[in-house]
Image (cartoon, rainbow, N blue to C red; front, side, top):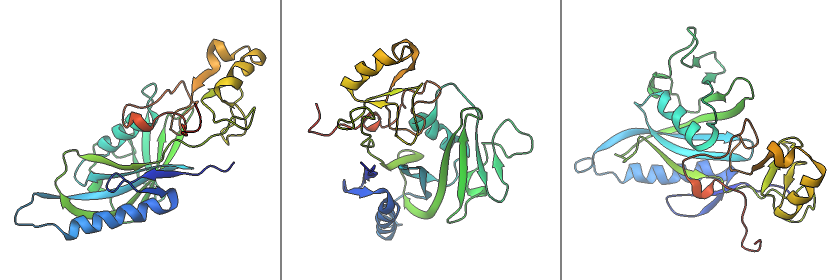
Length: 241
């Protein structure tokens, strides 16, 4: 079964595919910008940013004047933080943003110092068991002042990963010993998880972990984020108990 990546637009509650979500969000932001009454509303410049990792995605708006620290903390809180590892943002042109390397710019660097429309940055978390993300600056908008410096606009729903043993039910748990990150092995439904425990002596000891809606699932003991926890678990179709 091919994975279908889609997310809910927090502006209109429409379910949109990964391929269409950036354009969909952009249409909302353009409309919001056009409808601003500058005489009565406090405004600010915001960047629309898309963050992707294979089938998974996030779309946010963020104040242009905040630092990369704000974006880094957000990505840690929603997708990657496990043990306080180092992280960095890098461009193909050689710009590096991290706090521990004297050849790089500090995470305190404002986004506006780097921004250009369409710019793509590589984000890395944990330089040992690394999680890689693509961060794209889609566009900038003048918008009504938001309550938060960074606001989540859409996120992929939990992926419909099928149990790699029975190939019928949807997976709930991962085996860290047998996992294949192409979803071909090591993902088990509730029933098959018990069967796998009989074959893998390490499963109940330390190798069993829950599926979470993050590209860091199954890595370094990561067990979920602290933002948008409603969408941070395994796939739960209405037909599956």
